[in-house]
Structure formats: structure tokens, C-alpha cells
Length: 361
Image (cartoon, rainbow, N blue to C red; front, top):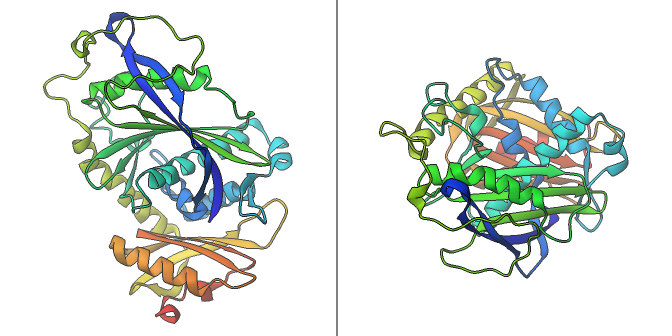
């Protein structure tokens, strides 16, 4: 585990021109502090990202994940930081990829934190929206990045990753992004929404979390340049869903196939191994977790031939991590459905012994 700094914000919703929902007030809440995050769990959403019409290839995806971990390090005080000098020397495209990928990962970890550390269900990437739904599920405007399956509800999530200096006050950019997202939330029945802005630096990572306040709440204004606009009723804004449109429940039922497709593509393209995890065949491979400074540490991306139920996956991952940790090696493992991710500091090469499930039983 590594720590990041989290700052919480609540916003209230008013009405702009033509009754469009807009942010009314934003207020930063008291209590800024460190939150432990697991970098391996934060990599999951990036490991399963679809690639459009092309098949996902294991070797390509493994190196993409290694590129992300290469620009991050954990200090002796277990603080997750950006390798700022190395990052600054990169091209704009690479820097954008790294910052947005870390931002997505921090969104997933902070949702787990907001849910009290409970296991969050599958992630659904809006980039994976089936073609059959693109014309029916929110026809115009901005959509969130992810949907989360929680115990009793669905939560939409939006993330941003930045390397600019973290602001002291709430800035215009998060407000503008929320204003772009609020019509989507209203078009889907006031859909729950969380937004994170992740600021990466050489001294630490700060994540600003934005959530809507309870109905009727009044906040101390902490936002300059608020546009004017009168409040109206919900019906004043024209919804862009017809009677045959669908909501997020229908989306969840169908986008499950996308994760299965990506897992199958990774499995077909991954190297074979002799290992079995939870009684299932494992394919995958290792890469250096640091492609820049060549520090000791390796990253594993693997796929099982069949899915593992959530409780068994969590139990196996914990057992492997406990067994693989000593004074010189720290091991983090994720086993979720068919996906297996591992990050082992202090090791080099291909330490297959760390993933020997039989040795952990």
C-alpha cells in the first residue's frame, strides 16, 4: 500500500439557461488526509481497457502497464509520488497517457475508499459501449468514464489526471467539467456521480473528490466566477431520452461482454505457463516495473482460463501477497474474475515462485 492525499468536496446543483442543471455551490470539506491505495488494484481498469475494433494483445498491454509504473515510485514513508524529472522529459502524448491512466486508477481506488473499503464489483468502461447502444444511451453531450457496480446501486465516475500545481481553492476547470456531466446524470434519473481530479507531483499525489450534497443542503461558497442563473424545476430541462431509451441497468447487463472479450483476447495472446491458480490454468508474463531507472521490481499480467468468484479471488490474492513478502520483497496481487495482476518490488526476472498457488495452500 502507498498513500495519497485526498481532499473532499460537496457541490449543490441549480439551474442555468433553459433549465439546464449547473453547479450552484462547491465547498471543500474539512479533514484532508492520507488514504492508502493499492497500485495493483489501480492498474485493473487500464489492464482491461478495450482497443476498439482491434484485439487486445498481452505483450502490448503489459508494456503499457509497465510504462505507468515506471513513472511512479513509493518513498521510504510509503507515499506514492511521480518521478517528476523523468516525466517532464517525456513527450506530450506519453505524459497525457500516464497522467490520465493514473487518474483513472485513483478514481477506482477512491471509490473503494468511499465505500468503506468494501470490494467493488466489476468496472464498466464507457469506451466499451456496445455499438447497438450508442444511439440509445445518452445521445449527445459528455458521458462519464466509468460505471461501478456497488452492492445496492450503480455509480458513475469521471476522472482527470494533471501534473499542474495542486490548487489551494476550487478552480473553474472542475466546475466546468461537472456542468458538462450533470445533463447526463439528469437524463438518467439523477444518476449518482463522483468525479476525481488527480494532481501528480514529485512530492506526492493529491486527489480531489467531488460528490453532490444531500438535497436541500446549503454550502459555504468556495468558488469564484459562478455564473448566474435561476433555479427551476427538473422538468424545465428537455430530456433527450425517448420512451424506448434505456438506462444504466441495461448497459450493465450488456457491457459485461466487453470485459469477457478483453480477457479472452489477453488469454489467447499471453504466453503459456505451467502454473495453476485456484485450480485454473494461468497464462501471462512478467516485465520490469521500472523501464527508466532500472530499479528492482517486476510486474505480472496474467489471465486464467476460467473466472474465480470474488471471495475466492480476494482470498487467494491475500495468501499469495502474504507469502511473497519479506524484508526485501513486497508483493501486491489482484485476482479478480479471470484477471491476475502482481507487482513485486525487490525482485527481477520472472519470479514464478511468487505465483505458485499450491505453495500458498
